[in-house]
Length: 139
Image 1 (cartoon, rainbow, N blue to C red):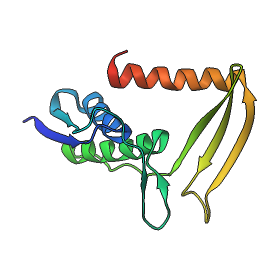
Image 2: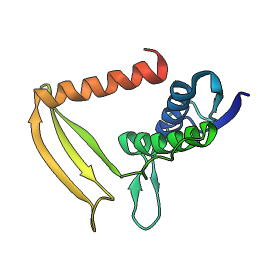
Image 3: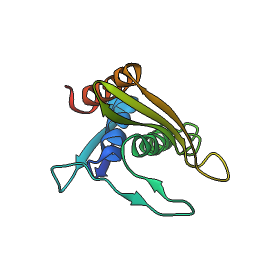
């Protein structure tokens, strides 16, 4: 029997959740993605620590949720908890991009490693965006 999953909100988390469920479960699930807006949602969530709900962090959290839903539907093992880590990119012009590797939940305090701007990071950022455009929008 096909399960129906309704995902409310098409921000980074909603897009990743709907995509991952569709890819993982294929014909075992029918996914509907609804959003009242025509744009992404950026913001913060609150809890014991504030964790950004934008880009890579929202995507990673959605992967855990999708894997947990998939495990429930097919009777599999639940995934490991959300780790709160990711990479952020910052453009500096002239084809240079810096990268910051962030770990928000892995220790007693948030930690970050900053890398100097380079063309290699610019290529990583472009690839990062290209893979999401392809998976989420078929572009």
